[in-house]
Length: 395
Ligand SMILES: [Zn+2]
Image (cartoon, rainbow, N blue to C red; front, top):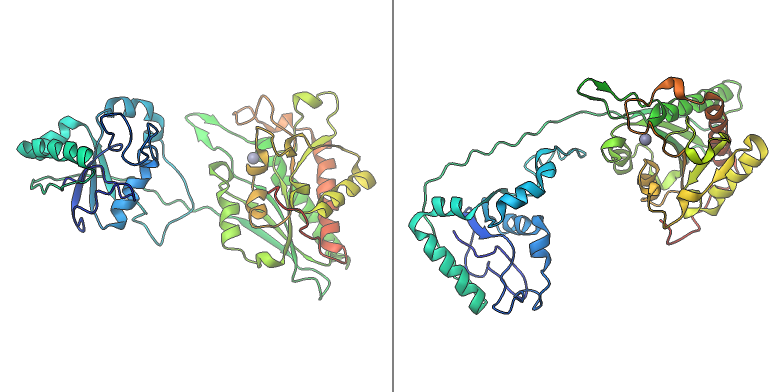
């Protein structure tokens, strides 16, 4: 069935013309424009999101019960060229395993020539119907009858990722149901061709720091001096593919998020960036004051008392163009309203390159940061009163 532009809008709707349930529909890309060059949707030269948001028509067709959508794109050659990378690359996301068919209906972009070939003689009617709809603002759908087999192969791979969790139960019966979560991502970029992306700094440094902190906590517990609150030590996967492991945990937490006091996240702490080449004992601190001033103060005090690193808040600026606050695993906690602190040494010439190797790690610096991570975690887990969320509007 030809269904105009496949638009369902208050200003203009093709779906008033026919019931599309169980049918394959043929629609035009874009939106109807009148003789003055104004959109029938916006009434102006500007196009609506029916033109800019490619998912909108597909979601609508799915909601209306259509089985398949052919979209005639008169500029298909240019569009394929412009979107080549997006079209060819795969995408990874956390599983839709309960809904394997996904949200979108099967669809195919075709050129006008291919559409003509599919429809045959009736294509003239299609064009006429479209032109009339543009003039009158009302579509008359065209029922088409054609024999067509579409062979549509979707390459879907299910990959299993694992977060690795260690639990140190708190020693204080009144506080142990509250938990501090310490995280680092252990995945990196893998292999491309023959090149191995070792990821010593990103994030071998964070992973081993968290294991060191964990070891110290366990040792304290062995000596009957363990933390009062519980501590969850978690190495997450899928960070480089979009913070997937931490997202999964935040959506499927083992311990209630309401009882989660804070997240302490370590991602790249073994190298020295350009700005600090003469002073390796620094660390960028991101996020600490965005939800709780107490978290910020705890880290500052721990540093003053024990580690004396230069704490740099450059990347914590709300307007920092790098947006690191949103780019590591702590953000999935912060997004849920849990105060989070992120330790980061900044980027360098080996960032996301096969040359991020272990002999370039500055271990003395890394050890100092590990101590700061430990002392901050320790205070979060041991102070009488749980830290408060007392900042708004910076998340
Ligand atoms: Zn990283």
